[in-house]
Image 1: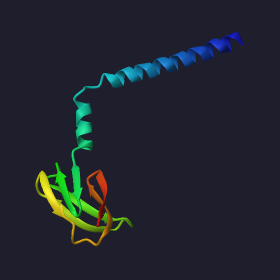
Image 2 (image 1 turned 90 degrees about the vertical axis):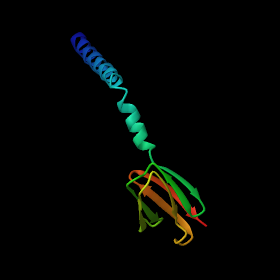
Image 3 (image 1 turned 135 degrees about the vertical axis):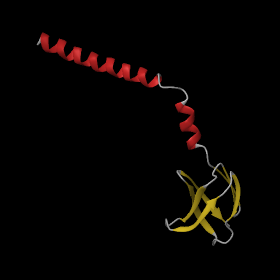
Image 4 (image 1 turned 120 degrees about the vertical axis):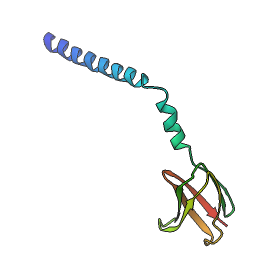
Length: 109
């Protein structure tokens, strides 16, 4: 009984040490990798005013517009870093705008 107890305690201590070591290794990763991930996530910006959409940081990307049923209703190529897109030709309602992994819900009144 005493031997089993020491074996179990030893295993628990080894696992705890391994977890601490892994956490320390993750903290040692180069700092320059972290801002790249954040900038990729926040790169594209949407500003909506009625049926006008102002898009920043999306040059050479494609804007996809979906209705709430998930049907793609429009595809627009963004050719500059700062672009205004008019969606007044779409019927009134709510839509999902998507550029790469960035998406936003808008409503056209």
